[in-house]
Image 1: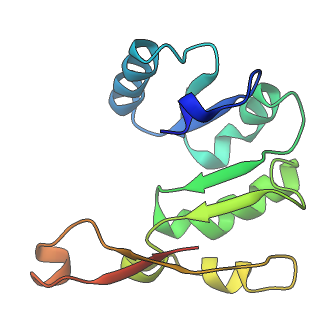
Image 2: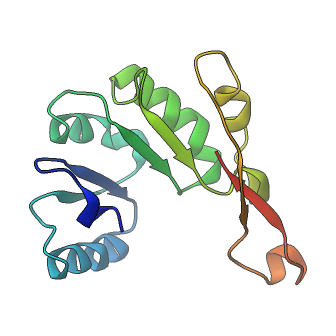
Image 3: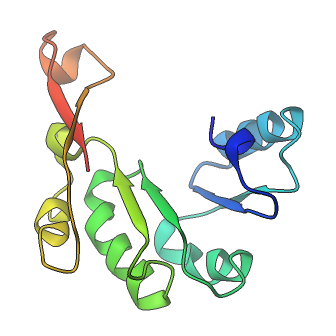
Length: 140
């Protein structure tokens, strides 16, 4: 959904831990005709900063979307700040910050360096994790 709305010359860089998921994503990106604007890097967020920065031509990102290892949100955000990927003006969006939760993340983005807004979002899975109940979640 983001790809077709990109401004000319814009770049999307995705970091995907699973080689299988990355291959699937790359096929979808190719089929959508977005291969010149969207890149998938295989690896962990904590290891990907140099390659992400290279793809962004050493400029901070306009938008970061976190939807990976929930325990990794806060430390990865700190790594991205140190690397210069996240800077003043970067919009950071994170999924599942209430359920199942992202330890330390909300505390980090509640500091004065961030202007944080929580948006209600239903948790997308109803099953064993929620004891078969609908659970409210949020994105920040």
